[in-house]
Image 1 (tube, one colour):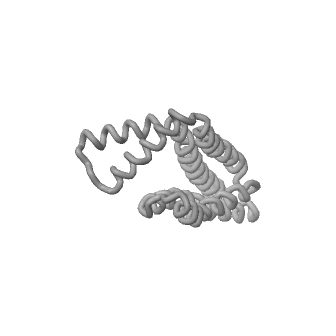
Image 2: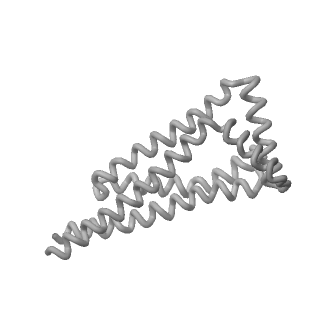
Image 3: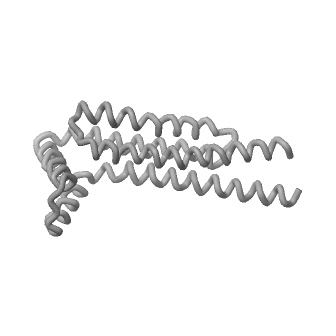
Length: 168
């Protein structure tokens, strides 16, 4: 019984670590959407200082010019980016439920896995419509795939925890 309790505690700790990692990634991803113009300005200054000239540097320069021009002429458009950031924070809050009771709130993990999978078609369809370069769409897909890996591992561990709790 003591070994079982020890294993339950270890499994619970691993689940919490995975959830904290996922929550942190969501928060960082969201909160970095607020200062997007400053981030792009900083990235472009770094690119210029390193004399980089490649597809990525040209793309970031183009995006910065678009964001700067839009913010100068139509600052209210950035409100959409603010809502994107807010949505990331709200979704991160939803994962507090599985932190408290992973077995009971496994549906949140499953929802997150579905959302992560949905990133791929969204990036390719919306990216095509919005004329986003292929390399950037693939880069965006990596966020969904990273999240899916983390949540899948978490889901597997929660199922093991569920089975162990049912037996005890």
